[in-house]
Structure formats: structure tokens, C-alpha cells
Image 1: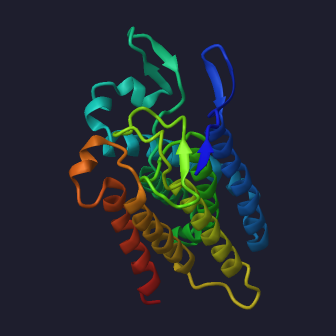
Image 2: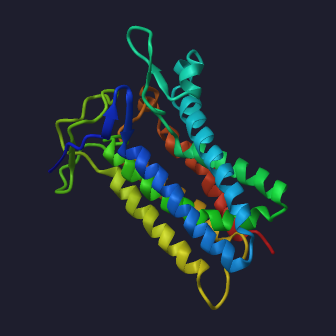
Image 3: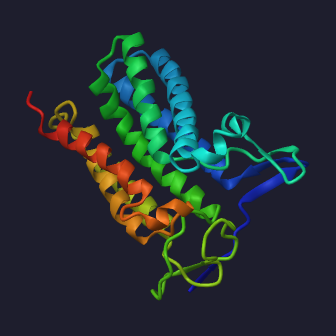
Length: 273
């Protein structure tokens, strides 16, 4: 097996710390900005619209991801502790708040937040909603790669035990996993997803920059939704439950939340002109 014992923190000063997850999350936005700028310039869209789009994306991603985790996975706790839901702090055993960053972000919540933010952006800027979705889908697939690598650095979203040669022993796995799995090799599901998302990004990139013809509106976002969330649905079978209530479920929360996105993608692919 492969022993994975990486410190999730790059450095810390007092109660403030910078984590690998934060760095990779930010990197996804920076690279996404340059990719969309290339697309906007190619299609003659003013770059100033991109600056505004970046703020919409950042707000939709962060708010959606945070609320998604709190309401989908731990509503009993966060509805009683709304401060921790809204601010990047956690109450310690003495009742004092400590800065920890947002400990818990849900990709499905981020997806809903992005869809809502882009819809508002399309109305304000008078752009086609589908046109925006097709181009943003390219960079979101790349962002998924960076976020899953951030999960790897955090030793979280771990797979079930395995005897395969590439099984990872996550020495620093969070204590909320039951039973404890930091002393046995497990599927590195973060890497599985990261590779898949990087492949989806390459697929969409090649389709968009195909010089012969542009994909029909809705095709890129349809492929993105079907491919990414179908992969997510399948890999969930290899994951350890993130919350206790999932232990009694046939399909876990991640799989149930993936199904509507898959059907939305199918609709975009089969809808008539």
C-alpha cells in the first residue's frame, strides 16, 4: 500500500492557516479565469463581462457549496449553529470560536449555486443562459480536478478498504470516519475522480476548439452533466460514508443528488432545436 501522511496545512500563523485545499481551490479560479478570457476574446465578448462573471461564479460556488454541505449532510447541527454555517469558524470544546476555514463544502451544492448565479448573470448581462453554461462547463470540469486533489491533501472523501496495490493508507484521515480507516489501505477515490474530471475537461476543450464547427448549444453542458455526475454516481459505491445516516441508505446522499443533474444533462443532449 501507499502511505499518505501529508500535512493539510502549508503554514500557520497563530489561529490563521493556509491549507493545500485553499490553494488548489483558488488555483481553479485563476486558471478558469484565463480559459474563459481566451473564449470571450475569441467570440468578441467584452472582457469586462468576465470580471463581473468571476464575482458571480465565486459567490455562487462558495455559498452553494457551503449551504449544500450544511443542509444536505449535517442539517441537525448547522441549523442550531448558524454562525458556523455562514462564517469560516468552529466552536471548540470551551465554547470559543476558532478560525478553521469552511470545514465542509458540497459539490452538488456548488453546482446548484453556480446554476443560479449564472442564470442571474445571463439576465443582467442579456446573454444566452445556455451559451454561458456551455463555456463555463469547460472550466468547472477542470475545477473539479483541483478540488478533488485538495480533498486528497486533506485526506478526506476516502474510499472503502481495498487490497489493490495502489491502496492508500490515510494516516491523517479525519476522526469522523466510522469505523476508523487510518490503519488500512483504501481506494484513493479522490484520485479516481480527479483523473475522470481532467479527462472530461480535455474532452470539452477539444470539442469547443474544434475548428471545423462549434457544438450545438447545450451539447457541452449536457455532456458535462451526464459524464461528470455519472462518474460521481459510480465512484460513490467505493466511498466510505461521510455521515452516519448514510449507513442505512441503499444509495448515499451523493448518488441521490447526482441523479437530477444527470437527467438535466440528458435533456440538454436530446432536446429539439
